[in-house]
Image (cartoon, rainbow, N blue to C red):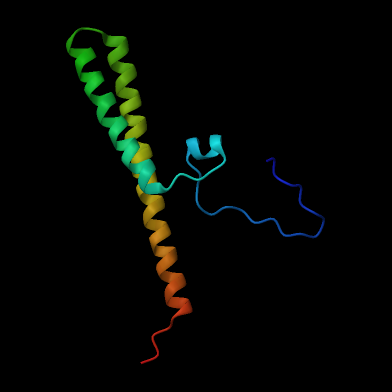
Length: 102
């Protein structure tokens, strides 16, 4: 279902949590811990492929796999940061809604 246009005077809210690429493609958000796990898995597979290619003198494939390994590693660190930011925001909201009144 396509997004509905905003009426004049309506406030348009922006999403505070980044959407992973697959989530944007399918119209849903992928939880950051899932993105983290799959990114680490793909980074490890690409690093293994890069090592295997470079040791068998396939330089182009090795460099390409190494680039993807770095890409997925950076993606994993970014998703970890999203998860930590979400935890901090939830803790702040909880503290704001349930003050300690001892």
